[in-house]
Image (tube, rainbow, N blue to C red; front, side, top):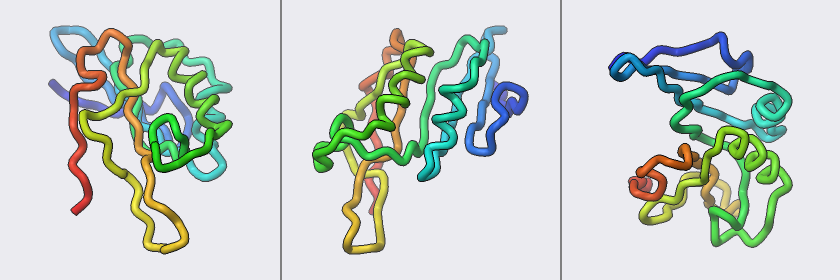
Length: 136
């Protein structure tokens, strides 16, 4: 397999689209960093991309929500936008075998949280069959 960066699909500094070829089939992976203004999510929601064969959407969405972080008791309106986007791709939020924190703050006033997420295509067998190594 050979991985390559595709810069022609999304024109946003915080969205990377990688593709690889496997048995002459092309597959895509989308990596998103969404800043505190959620600019990448707004861009994805407002952009129609005619792409297929996306296997995974992942990374730092900077959204705290009780759906994926039981220690956070609130619902974020930004998560609704995120789910609108992933639903367009027929993706599902994946939960690792053991949930671990993915964001650690140096400030004692902020609580550590889960903001790095993985979304898989609905028919993927990997949806909830992986682990994340906790920070040591």
